[in-house]
Image 1 (tube, each protein chain N blue to C red):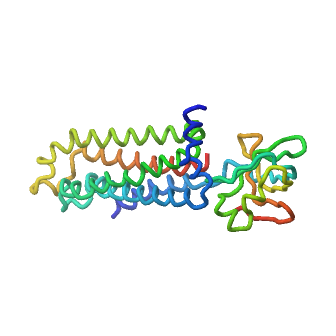
Image 2 (cartoon, each protein chain N blue to C red):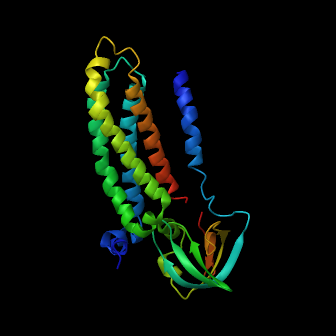
Image 3 (cartoon, rainbow over the protein chains, first blue to last red):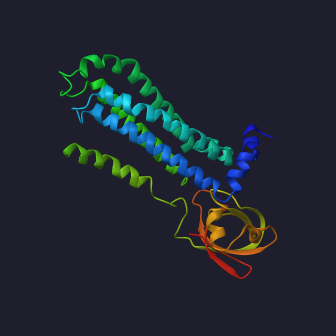
Length: 162
Length: 113
C-alpha cells in the first residue's frame, strides 16, 4: 500500500469519510480557525498599511499575534484530518499544492517582517512619528500578507470546485 | 474611508471568482442514465457510485452523506447490485464523470441539491 493509501485507510481517514457528522464538524473547526487567523492578521496588516495610526503597531502586534499563533491549533489538526479522508486526491490537486506553497510564502513573509522591519519599530512606531505613514517595508509586508492569506483562503475554497 | 472602499473593490471580485460553484460540470448537457450500481461510497465530502449504464460505466458524484441520509437515501439503498437512474450533468474534463441532481432508486426519487 502506498503511504497515501495507508493514510486514507487509517481509522481517522475512514471515520472522516463515513461518520455522518464528523467531516462537517471538522470543517467548522477549520473555518473558526481561519476566522481567527485572518481576522487577527488583517487588523495588524491594516495598521501597518497606515490605518489607525493612533494605536502602537507593536502593542497591537503583541495583542493579536498570540491569537494568530493559537489559530493554528484549530486549523492544522482539522486540515490534516480532512487530508486523511482523501490524501491521494489532495496531493494530485494543483490547487492544493498552490495552497501549500502560498502558506509557505505567507510564513516566509511574516518571518521576514519579524526579522527585519519589526526590529526598526523603535524608530517608526515611536510616540513622536507614529502618526506618519509606516515605512514602505512595513506596508509592502502587510500588503503581501493580505494578498497571500486571501489567496490561501481562495485556494481552500476552490479545492471543492476544481 | 476612501481607501476602505478601494480595498473592498480589490477583494470582492476575488471572492466572487471563488464562488462560481459547479462550473466544472456542463449544465447545457442534461443527462439521464439508468444502470446498475457496481460500486458505491457513502462518503464525505460527497457520496458517489459507479453506474454501469448501456455503453459506458460512469462515476456519479452524489451529495454529502449527511444530506442523503436526511432526505431518505440511507447507505443500504446505494449497495452494489441495485438498479438506479440518475439525472445530472457531465464533467467538462473527465469523460466518465457526472454530477447527479437527483437519483431514483427502488421507486424513490431523492433530490441531491
